[in-house]
Image 1 (tube, one colour):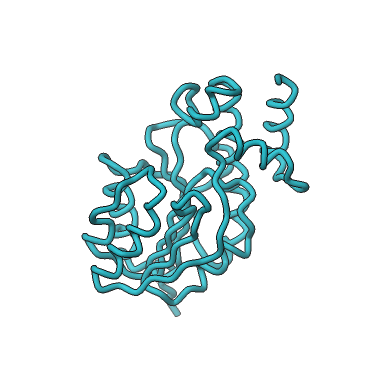
Image 2 (cartoon, one colour):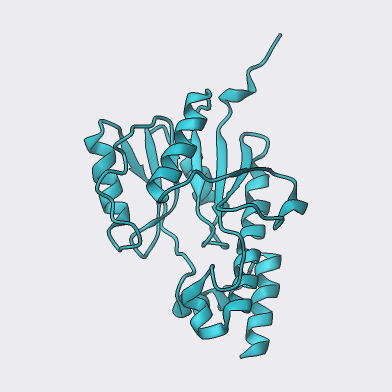
Length: 217
């Protein structure tokens, strides 16, 4: 018997090359560009490790904005994000996966290193055309799609508190069903980092990076 493994869902982690001054710039203003990049590198590494827990049921990929050797030791499939803004990057990744026969394409951001496994599982289990993992800042930490439409991000103004609301509206206007998952938070601002530092059980690389930040303060 021949099995078509392409029907498996794919989890795609979007990340930037961890170059000081290009990542976590709002944190860098407080802790410095180098420590902010170190922290970001740890966030991505721990998120990859968390996603690999789903390897029995989904394929895992890392899509970076530019060519980088970062995280190569973690052994996940890699690709480059499409050119253009975030809307084009998301549409390209989702459409490529769905059109290749994937049952679901989940795109995750790299700003939520303590995201609970159950939050990811809920999106994976969603039967909706589109399921969003909402963030407290009005955005979302993940989007899981079983169908794709070219206008599903139409009118979304990125990097604003209205991203999730606008995405839900655009998805519905495209004729797709949408579901909202469990709420979590991104680590973008100094107050988010302060919250992260109080977490009782940080993943290992993030814990070390946070300790390094604290030792410099």
